[in-house]
Length: 263
Image: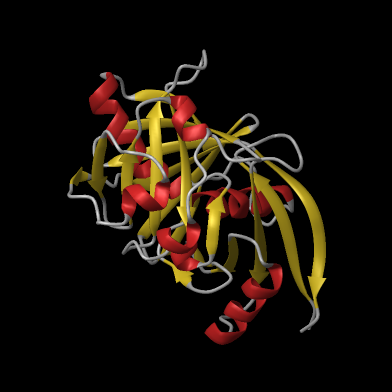
């Protein structure tokens, strides 16, 4: 039977910016191989597959090459689709069961807030090829469960970065988050995210990375609520709030494509 699929730009209210994710709403658990094939066909950084259960929604995420354990922008896109298509009441908070446990979403006016686990990073030695792959010398290197987190000397250094993606793909883990304190008025920190290891050369806006960036900068800046900018070519805004072992991620979303899968 035809299956609805929606493309949503997440962490933005402007079409063709933020991070696009495909959301596929299913009635039954599909074959994993089929989900990977759909994600490869969509060729976006993430495709989300969501199924209604009694008290929650089952949610999985795939890049064009692998299934991942946590994705922020595709979760935000999924919540947007469920509310926007009246599959869930607009005033109802959503619970998603995922490989990273229970994740929650609520809507406040035009903004969606995601309740995600904090992913604190610890100081780490840089892999031998990291600086050469980035083409920049880190001022600090840390690591959390998924990625390396690399601080550079300035916002300009983050924005101007042109890494060697083939070399960067040799860095172990899911990817590399590059960050610096913001000098642009209104922002607290900026970042970019590269994950050629999982088929995503540069991710436009990465919610899961902010689960590590938020506690990292909360400690450095002495504040728990911050506004972050991911300085990819598309760009995106992420509001973050650190609350103990959880991080709240706030952002907007806009639907750009609605279609039907026939395969």
